[in-house]
Image 1 (cartoon, one colour):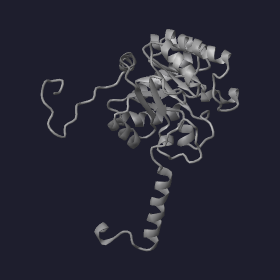
Image 2: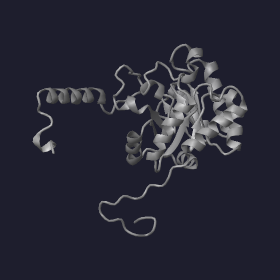
Image 3: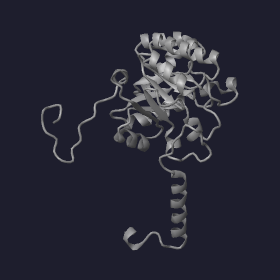
Image 4: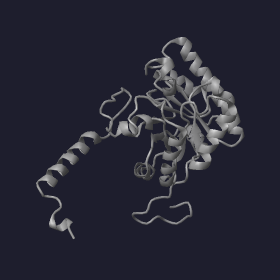
Length: 280
C-alpha cells in the first residue's frame, strides 16, 4: 500500500521523500544507517539520486579527482559553487551538502557568513560542511542563527594538510583523541546537524558517536558511525593511484574505460566503426 492507501501496481516504486537534516537525526534515533557519496557532475549525481543515496556531498575533493591537484587547497569558492549548481539539477531526494573551500570561512565571521550565504543562494544546497572543531564554533553558531545548516568535519581534515604534514590517522594518541571528543560536543552544541569523522580509530569513532545526539558519518572511521561516506571516484575504481585501506572498490572503471577506449580506437582505425546500421 502507498501512503495514500492505494495499492502500488507491478513495476511502480514507492515515492521517496526528500531527505532533510532532520531526517538524518531521526535516522540516528531509529538506528538507520546513513549512506553518503561525493558528487561533482550532472549524470553521476542523477545516478546517485536514483540509486537512493541519502546524502550527496559536493566535496572539495574535486580538487583531486576532477582538477588533478595533489591537495584540496586550490579549490575556490566559485569552483565549488559551479559544481554544486550542476549537481543540484540532478538531485530530487538526497540531502545536498556543499564543502566550503580552504580560506573561505577562516578570515572573519562576516566573510564566512557571506560566503556560506552565496553557496546556499546560488546553488540551492541544503547545507554546508566546514572542517575544524572549537575554532569554528562561533562561525557555526552564526550560520545556524541565520538559517544555514552546518555539517562538521573532524579527525583528518584535508584542508589542514600543511599543518599535519601527512594524511596519517588522527586521534591515535590520548591527547588528540580527547580533543576530537571535545570538539564533537562543541560542534553539536554550536548547532551542527551532523559530523564527518575522517580517518580516526574505530574505537574513538564509536565513543564519539555514542556521545552525540547528532549523526556521525565516517570515512575510514570504522563500522560504528551512524553513516558512511566515500569519494565516488574511489569506490568506482576510477582513481588507480589511490589505494587507502578504508576504500572498498565496487567497480574497476579505470580498466573498463581503458579497454573500451582501446576497442573504439581499434574499430575506428580498422574502419569497423561506424557500421551500416550506425550510418544514415
